[in-house]
Image (cartoon, rainbow, N blue to C red; front, side, top):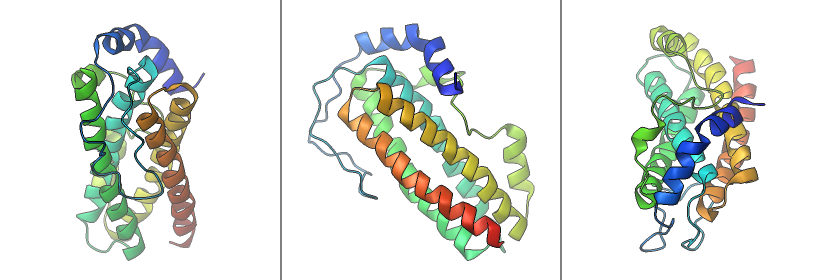
Length: 199
């Protein structure tokens, strides 16, 4: 049983209560701001109540995305990083920052306190404090290589979490985002692995 599934099962009573207490996952104007990149798009506003799987995916993916943005911030603050690595880090910032805002909006619409995710396992691919410290301490070309190695693992975890959401989630917007994570991050994994072999 993979880590996201264990986390889902362990927290199922909590998220079930939250989902039952939450309101329907709808949007006021049919817009999902920040979802204008890639091939993904917004479905019509859903009247489906958020299920435990919907809530779990979002509460796990927000901190996962936040760490990816933090990793990108760290490498972009350094001198001497390969320009191709810089472009990938900038793309991750541009994609995942707005997705965080969208997912936070869903939690608000569902009546779920984002703080309920604190202390949960956030799924495979999350960097440890030591991993983050190593990236922060690295310089130049070494930082670029380490960023690629870490982000491949990070993306692989996100893809696994998103596949679990496609298997279990009900809200069409959540499923759209999960598919977009799979498509975008799978492509970036291949790109980063190819680039890492060249550095």
